[in-house]
Each structure stands twice: as C-alpha cells, then as structure tokens.
Length: 306
Image 1: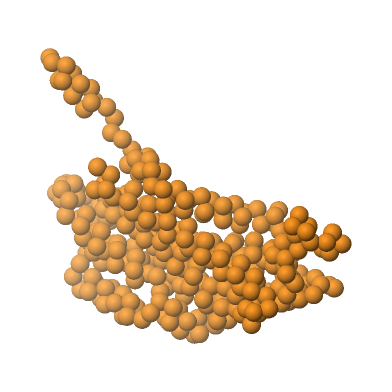
Image 2: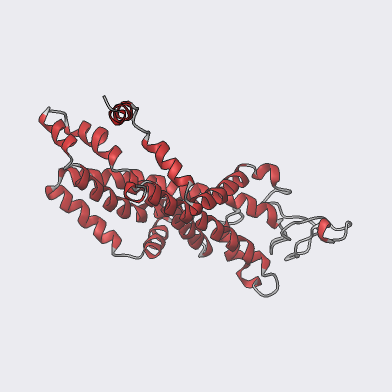
C-alpha cells in the first residue's frame, strides 16, 4: 500500500471532531467575539460581586449628604475629610456607585430570563408549526404576523399598560413581543432540516413524530436560535431600560439602569454624570452581546470556516 493510502486510511480512522469544540475554537479566532466575551465576563463578574464591591446599600438614603454631589475619590485629590463616593450622590441622596453595580444584576437577569422564555415558547411554536404544517401552521404563523405588525416597544408598552407597571410585568411583556421572531426562525430551520435524508430514514423506520422532532430535527436547527438569542439579550435590556425610563418597568427605589436615567433626566446640565454612567453601562452591555452574537454567527456557520 502506498504512503498516501496509509495516510488516507489513518485520516479516515480518526475520530470525528466535536462540533461545539470546533465552534468554540472558531469563536476564539474572531476578535470581535473575544472582545464581546471579555466585556460580558466583566459585567457578569460585577453583577455577581455587587454585594462585595458596593460601598453602600443601593436603596439607602444617606443622612447629611448633599444631593447630586459629584464623584469624590480620595486617590484623585478629593479631601480626606469628605466621605468617598466613586460615582457621586444621586438626586435622592443615595450612593450612585452601589446602584450602578446592582443595576448590572437586574439588567442581566432581565435579558437572560426574557430571552430564555421567548426562545422556549417561540421554538416550540415554530417547530410544531413547521413540522406539522397545514392549518395549524397557517394559524400559528398568522398570529405571529399580527404580533410582528406592531413595533416591539409599542406592543410592550401596551401589554404593561394592561398588566400594570412593575419589573415582572415588563419582563413578561418583553418576552411576549420577542416570541414571534424566534418562532419564525425555528419554523424556517425545521422546514430545512425535516427534508434531510436521516429524517426521511427515521420516518421509514417508523420512529414516532415526537421523537423525530425533538431528538433529530430540533438539535440540528438550534444554531440560528442561539445566535439570535445572544443578539436578542441586548435588545431585551434596552427595551427593559426604556420601559423603566417611562415608569412602566422597575419601580423606585429599585437600582435598575433605566429607572436611574428616568429619575435623573432633569439633572442633565447640573449633574450629567448621573445620566452618562448608567447610559454607558447599557451601551457597554448591548455592545458586548452584539459582538458575541456576530462572532457566534460566524463560528457556527460552516461555510465561513472552510
């Protein structure tokens, strides 16, 4: 046997590479994804360590402290006799640094929970619709079309107006308005995968439709949902902040970035840092998820990794 034949035989005998390990390797080769991962890792660490890093209770009103006080950092020349407040004092005499740290917790939880809820229900609806087809497919998709006809934020405001202001109702509203997008993506993926040869073989062998859908089709249709979910977390955080800014989401004294912007919007000229800091935090979070989502899209697309 020739050398080429031996090499070819050895190559074919090697174990197939793991799809997710390959995707992780390609992901780490994307500079944007690495930057996004670092940003999100930092934000997650801040959210987890908020009780340790915070210098005050985020909802505590400090006695004898002037409102809208600028940041006081001793290492940067602030007099030692003054109490140190890294981000200053807000309009309600609360330590702004502690509130921003705890705000990372609320924003990340809102993003992950609302998108997780939307992906679960949207995927189920889209998968059943795409696999069964017929009148059920038409009914589900027409309902999704009606929901998609409304702007996301406007529909979320309408839902919260009916349910009542509050963080949980805002989270539910964001989840509901996000479902149609994931249902559409899941349906398209299922329609493509269910025509594959291995699905046809399972049908010929008499495998139950439920097993085919959940064990064969859905695992191979998750890639676009993962990418869209990563991008959707940033959108959910912005929508939650917008609802809180309007007074429909988190309620005082909850330390959430959107409500911080709403409470301090009248101080844009005399204390602009009170708006810049939470606004920058929202921007940084959304940027991190967008960069990671773009990297995932490239890493999970085999056509881009040949």
